[in-house]
Amino acid sequence: MKRAVVLTAALLASGAEALPDRKALAQTANRPEVTQADHPYAGLWVTEDGHVRHELLPNNRYVEARGNREKAYQGRYEVTGDHIDYWDDTGFTADGDFIDGVLHHGGMILHRRR
Image 1 (cartoon, rainbow, N blue to C red):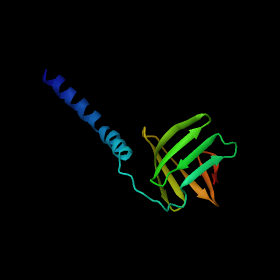
Image 2: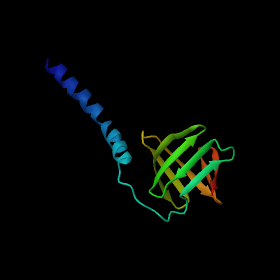
Image 3: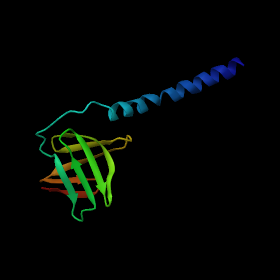
Image 4: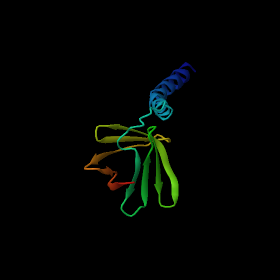
């Protein structure tokens, strides 16, 4: 019986090691928003065919539309220099780079739409 208790405790402890990652994801998704009203990249970014659209909001949130799905993904973003990191509300992460006024993200090229 003691072996079963020790084994159960060991299994629980090893599973608990994975919990900080889940907890970190939850903390990232629920992190207070930082307002950057003068952010240079805020606005609408669109693929040439218009299928993918990223709206980078000035409060560091984004909404990604794909085709007819106006809110396919949403979450927060952070820009460091010309690099952008995305964290969607489900915990998925992605990134991209702004090069010569064009957003390169996930093999796509998005242009600013004014």
